[in-house]
Image (tube, rainbow, N blue to C red):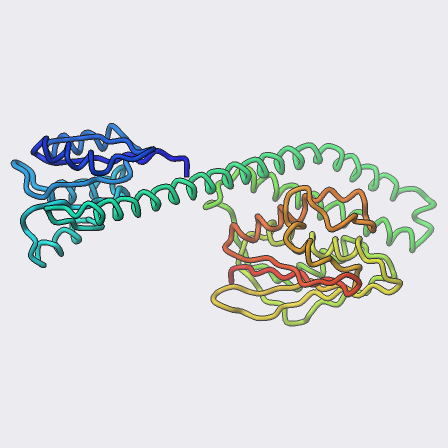
Length: 364
């Protein structure tokens, strides 16, 4: 833990402050002092990184209970831990009043040196853990922001060439050779359908990247129909047989994110399959504690146990990735972010030569 721990000592008697500071001196600790309630509140607002307040109860003008109440009422300071330190008011009703005003502990004078140091050390560790958590959340938010900017850039850059592809296909369909062949006309129809679907996805990505998370559109999504659309647009080769369960649920969610999760798993199952007869199953294993459990199972090459966690990290792939050596190792990491930002979980069951089953949960 490399964080400084700043402690505010509040007592109307300076000699008590000096004694308490001498008792608590330690590496990476910084002390701020105040001799009355008003000064204590000013110091708290001046130093936004104070992790603990050691607060005397019996002070003139404004007692410790009033100071604690004001600290907890202010959004900028309400998170700060408070320990009351007092030589009087040891009765249960006063102790309970202290906790009601927001204190997390209550120390009676004369202070036991070992107990006081131990309790302050506990709050110091908690403070450092909180700072580490804040840093982790900040890092995750930065990664998510980078991904959304990347999504916007890619989607925006794809619009122009996609419009060109659409126009070209539309023009080719007028050729007499195309008009004379029903089979080629069907292929052209499928191409146009795929281009239109991709155009819709790009529009959704652009809309998503411009919109704050809390404003993003949710809609009922038939996950069975979603899976069928994805399979159709991926054009799996003839030797790959894909079975989609008939009882997949309807989920009210952001369609784009769920589409990307399903598409990544299904696409991987197709392109990595090394069997003469590929088998892929898309299914649903129930609803538990407000989350639907989905899976995509294949009979492909499988993944070594040592790689089960690694494949979800950025730029990591399973083993040598002999089936598709050009694989970048980005997709599963993004899928993991999409699932976990909604409170879901993602995992894989696999053994080399026995295929893989990817599981993920999604809020109902």
